Length: 257
Image (tube, rainbow, N blue to C red):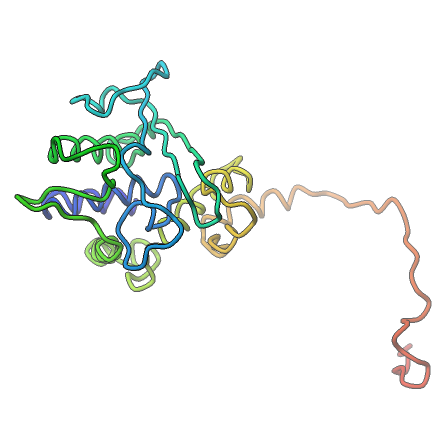
């Protein structure tokens, strides 16, 4: 809902904000860190995505060239390669199909990003061009992490804030994209920790830091399932110590009858 509201919000807000929204949507579906899809003030080990890191295939699993003018229509899958990451793993790939949604879709978002860069930059665009660049008139500019935060908070405020989303704009940051991806999977029936770890490229259960256990949706049908438990039978006894080893008879509290 938030992503759809944001996408609708930027339709008349200028090219920079439309590009930012597309990067946010594209980053969300792959649980990306901001430094993976936009410019940051202090570059770290993680490398930003470039055009050659994005690969498209049609519904028959055949490669679709980025130069295709109808890239959005032809592409049924998108694969993203992460050349180097914070965890040190290099060259990991993740692939997603269309979401079935016109605006909030990983394939369409990345197809729009790539097609715009290839079209607007012309011959100056190559496989090593960062996905965060765009042409604004005669200038080549780049979407920054600051732009991402500005749009997320701006859209939140303009579309109802806490009343609609359950959180204030001040609570939102670039990590909200990664945590939102983890949460969106955690709330789905049949989702597993392994699936979340695979999507976000987590090598441990560190992703649990992003899971908010107190969201209303997490309640689910827990009470109904628990109420169906009719009995619990203990099939064996276990040895109980006759006296705690760390308590002596001298300092032991009197036993109450």
